[in-house]
Length: 320
Image 1 (cartoon, rainbow, N blue to C red):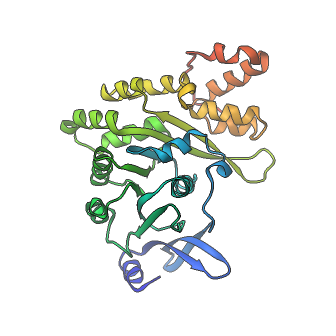
Image 2: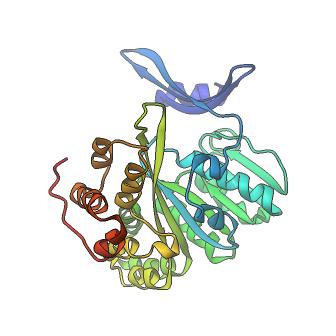
């Protein structure tokens, strides 16, 4: 810890930061007090910037990395690879375009080198006091892309929307389980009297919500990413504007041609490819019954599977 981090740790008894150990690697650290003693958990960070193809993310992620303006939000639980996927997007943009990329992170995990783009990385607690203070001044730094490490408050969400409205690409992460829940959480950041304008802003400026889970591989060697994608097509934008977020899941199921898919479809695809087990596919599903049905239909008649699933939706009974 540096002096400021040490003082903050003594005051709050919590601290999150990243460290580099020469010849060993880079680590994300969560320090805390337990039973009156200091403790910590370290997560190793790869020093090489990951590739989108290497992470086996859907091809549409490359397109999202290159759009000129709008907002792309990555969601998932802690430790599901959101920061890794965003680092891959920044790396792809860095090597395939020019411009200025500004990131505000807590802490900085992946350290980017300038390639086609100039990359400015700011760490909360070291380079700036808070996300809000850093974001307040970001537009004065002439950015083309702005990455917000985590949206934690209404004020941060306001900045993300404002950046996308003013012609910038804003990338951000949010803690939510899936695309629908992410939109619900964003809406609940704001008071009732602001929600009509918020829904209009989201319908116009949101480009995509990408949700991730990491599922154990069938061979026991690591994990595979399952990805749900909501793309803000005109029909999706209309549903968002009307506040009919609950209807987006059905739209995602039927919009594979636009790059959309649900977690259940992604899990079925991984299971069909032999990459995850049946038990893990069911355990990670939003609707266990739908995944069971997809697997059963595909085994029975693969050629007619897509047609048979069109419009089918079963309520999950909660059993696995």
